[in-house]
Image: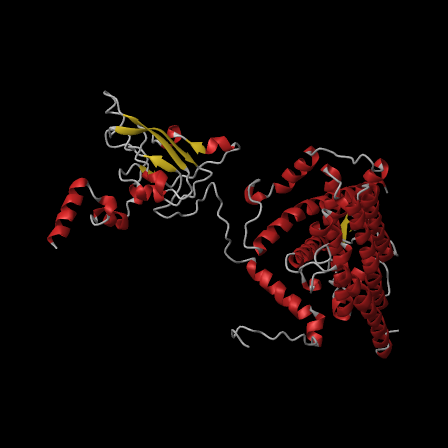
Length: 342
Length: 203
């Protein structure tokens, strides 16, 4: 039992560090991908290929002067970025990173915890993320920050509905809310994206909006809102907001991979002639490959598509995605009934 | 009335279903950005890598010395007259006895200033100079924080006597050909002018 607790604590720490590491290097990757897509080279001065750039950026963030607006609410001003960062990290708890490790007859799952309402938990945590943005924008006591925060929260709330509806269709086919079971169902069979192509598309679009990333990065569009909800933030508090965004991207990629792309399963893994533990490690690596692909995909889209106008954003969310998601639920239900799956 | 044939009738036609989906257009755009990942980069890594420049590149000026180390400039002021940006000013002085090793001609520039903020690096001063004294070089005029520093005096313009600036790169075939052409007033000595006048009289 003690070993088990130590193992869990170690796993939490590892996942925490990996999330931070991936987020740090996502900033580097973002700049590199952007540069390459624009026929540039990108950061290449700090270390070989600029690989120490995230560390340099981190040091810079810490060395910056910390400015607190005079008329801001000090407590809320600090709570905002803390909340954004905390909620971003909380969602890592449920991701199944790989199969089980068996050492001396004891099983060590590569997942911090599996709760039977996992999907709901993730949605709950993501929803709290809105508060980080909203509180930060409001506490800044600046109209641009407030406008950015209002945009962010209304956008997130609108797209959460379509996202939830897309997930409902997925839950109808899988019949479970546990991420582990959703993953295991996809072992040796077709991935969920084959059964839910429309649902996946809706989920993906909503994920972009939830992450406040281009083409839905209205909350922080510099041309209209100076810097969006983090206009007044400086130093590492700003760093927390930016960092939380990249952690969220990491988590979203992991969630998309788990829900729709077979989680940690490798296609035809039952034919790979290796020991269970080695397979678990391979699965872990394969899962990370999927996650990194989706992170790249997020960046790819960001440097391709222009930003939406605000009314277009709301129009797409309410008038297109929600009806489409409802249609998807009905179509799934009809198909399942017709095929005798209910 | 139709003035040109460039007129285009803009039809606001209904979008087809495929167009309304936007997904084909998005896929098309993404394939374009993906192709750019592998394209040759336009970046030149500056301090290590230099952009190739022309042999006759027009950078910071130099006032040349002759083979004995005397300044070639005679303060005739033709460069200042030729300068379209009015960046050049000078003050002349008479050469004293015993200064023959310093100045080639009897008159020299006691003060010679180029305002590098006004200069447009057109090279007309180099073209105007009858003494081959001023040249533009492949050096870049350095940046500074104060405007006053950009008025370059003789201290910055006259070449170092021990480290003459190599201009052989500028003496391209075309330049050498031009210098030989005595019909160009620029290349004429007094004797050439007399000769040309005589030939004109004959005709």
